Image (cartoon, rainbow, N blue to C red; front, side, top):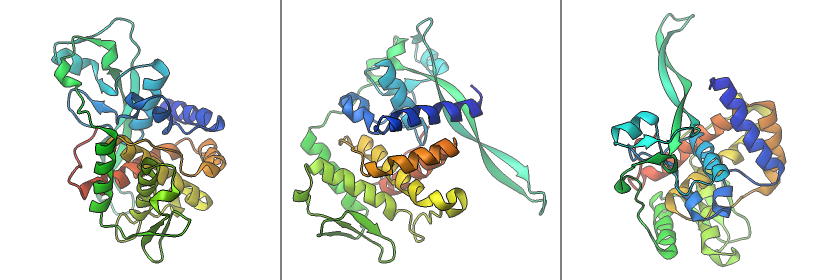
Length: 288
């Protein structure tokens, strides 16, 4: 699949969900925990990254696959397995680094170019070793305790009180209502992850300046990045994610309909934020 066709296809599927009032990155939790697991490559044991996460979530849910594990045709063969005939692949992307010469300075620099490739869910493959797709099971309490420890490890200045959940850039702290104000501990933790996503964008951290890329839609883009960051981390930690700001759906629709690459940029920056937060717990690993 040509990359421009992939931009259009992925954006259209997310737009279709948003127009129904459902965020694609929340749907996995509404369809059972098996859909909420972070997509991973069963051969390399690496999690997928960026836009590949919602792409694979969508494919898993729409086709009813019971697992979030994927691999390429060649990787299946190397494991002594084989993709069943007539099975349809799913297109994901990787960034290929290219050396180009700057026209003004004549200096060489590296730029990233997205390339598409095909993967198959392990449910489409016969002969995959059971150890390849095994998952470590935790109780809900264990998952929530791990999420709380994960958040604490960031050392973000999180202040409990009041009735608003937000990050205040000028003062560089997160404010959250008491946990008892949320309908569940899980919701409290998911909201904390959303606000920590905003916290990563500070100049002293990832220095996330979106104005040059999104102009007047920069605020909506930042909320989309924080949403995706929380979704990725909820999946990583095994806690149920929810749509944090439903009122932004209209703004996101306007953004995506105008720019079919916006969701790719947002997903990439959300993965950067999630990996930044994961680093505090020593949980960052190479990704696909």
